[in-house]
Length: 97
Image (cartoon, rainbow, N blue to C red):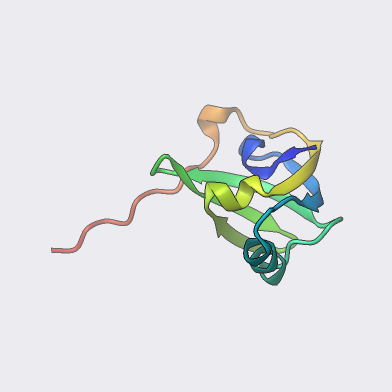
């Protein structure tokens, strides 16, 4: 098992646990839809220190902070199909004048 935030972009896995000492964070992750046995795919890391982290949870795309992703334990099921340099990255929104 490893934390969700340690997967590579494009890798998939199954949720094995929500390992949190904070009951509010655990409740938030469960409300978002994380549950043991669910399939997740790490899509990409954001441009600001790797945050947010975009994941596909079942058929929904969710953005998580690194601390939230670290609380979700994953059993990897498939390695990424893309080279790390070819993986998509989230871009910062353009500034409006």
